[in-house]
Image (cartoon, rainbow, N blue to C red; front, side, top):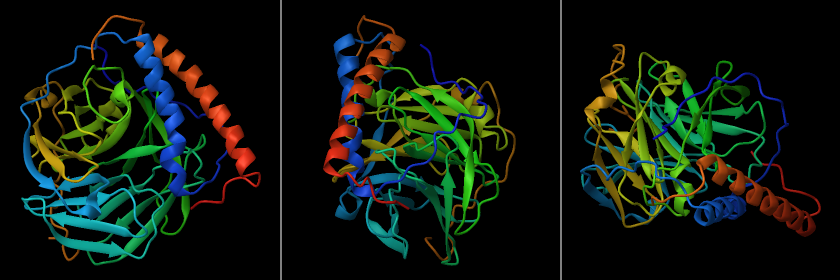
Length: 374
């Protein structure tokens, strides 16, 4: 079975940024995902050596309606910090061991489409406002909630046009990496090309590509296409491992120091996840021995999934300072058929036609074009 691998990339040809607004984001992505799903279903897919889900267990169940679109979580020990995908202001929730909300912190910022969450070594909570299903945003953003209550907004631009992204990897040295969500399974990895500027905009550098293939693991809202779409990322508290998840599987790599691109260039261990309606969140447990995964919908399970010991066997991680878990004052299908390449080409052709038709229809309805987004 072929697993993800990072390929270093050189500068891409600029396509130029475009802009848009949030609330149309889900519907506009539907033609692409539908096209890919239809192509994979009609063409069939090769066996990808799908594993049985690990011996997972439900830790607790989220029932709070404010978390109906849960898309990011971080285990900080006695609490789990979570965020929802949506809303008109930044909101971070702390859950106890029974998944009950015990604290909420808000910030006077209206996010466009927040998709993932990380907690830095100093207790800063980072939100990745990087969702862009329409591919229309001129900029994306990282939002920082400091332990002293201060907030910061860092705008970012891609070097090669808009991307949809739902995964944030915060390296032990504090460098953020954004991993895109690509319908054909080739996710780009980006990091800031210059120091972040509060209230300003800096460019992103494309530092690699992680390629995903069909696994046969069931789950997610879009059929087999969900096996290719990256929906969340995590870095272990001790800096020893990183993980990316799709709607159906988690991939775990050993991490040496803060070299995230180097880690992603290695061979991961794939963990088939229990089927979820729309699994988008992943974190390592505070002790690093397992993953916690969750997704949209209430009631919704927060599920504990063991991580195989092999994830740290071949490439031991370099020692690094453990992250501070506190938030200080802020928060205490198998079968024969064509190859994946063939299926992907069919999917791409169908998707291109549907996107072209959808674009013409949108232009007819709105000849002035989309409004400028944040």
